[in-house]
Length: 251
Ligand SMILES: NC(=O)c1ccc[n+]([C@@H]2O[C@H](COP(=O)([O-])OP(=O)(O)OC[C@H]3O[C@@H](n4cnc5c(N)ncnc54)[C@H](O)[C@@H]3O)[C@@H](O)[C@H]2O)c1
Image (cartoon, rainbow, N blue to C red; front, side, top):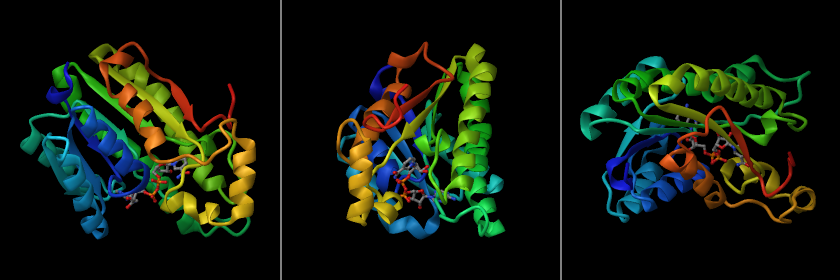
């Protein structure tokens, strides 16, 4: 299937890694459905304008990925406007730092709701479309934090480990329908989320020292590996997690 016949949905696409993924897919010929929450409207529209410069069709749809009704409506609208969905990138996510002892219950709930349940709800909504066409590419953005994690991120780590476990079983269920499901685990990437730590040069330098490539990641570093999982080059790759971290977690 050539680039300009494919339609991809990217959640949390207004900024950071999601925006870089969207532009990376646009550059490779994908038509795009860009999602974010309504308060990100202006920045999502900016992403859409940049993506359209590559020549494909691009629409922006607002939905909270943790809300089933909004997700179902978003996917129905995407299919109505774009005809179908070939690829989905579950990128929307949040990080609310706290140690376990003092972690407010709503930190746990919101992080699990958006990072883990949001991935499930989007996948659940797109599966009938992908099964009907016998083709699909699902790429879930987990984190190296879901593998070993860091202090004050136990709930975040749990949510990202949930995404990996979910993806491994999903791959087994949907493989017979021509659908692949894989995870990307970004490392330390300079975004609004990453900046929480990286603005402190001591912490930033410590991460560089732990990274084989000796630098902090750029959002664009994640786009190519995601595009691989969204393409036919990965047709026989499923149930996998790929670290995109410049060499922090070596396996
Ligand atoms: N930055 C890093 O170092 C890093 C490392 C590993 C994994 N990740 C993961 O990569 C993904 C993107 O992170 P980022 O660093 O670009 O963060 P970011 O905060 O810059 O961007 C996250 C995007 O998700 C959107 N979003 C949040 N809640 C949403 C919801 N309920 N529905 C729809 N959209 C929602 C936000 O509005 C924002 O546009 C996240 O899943 C994050 O956990 C980031």
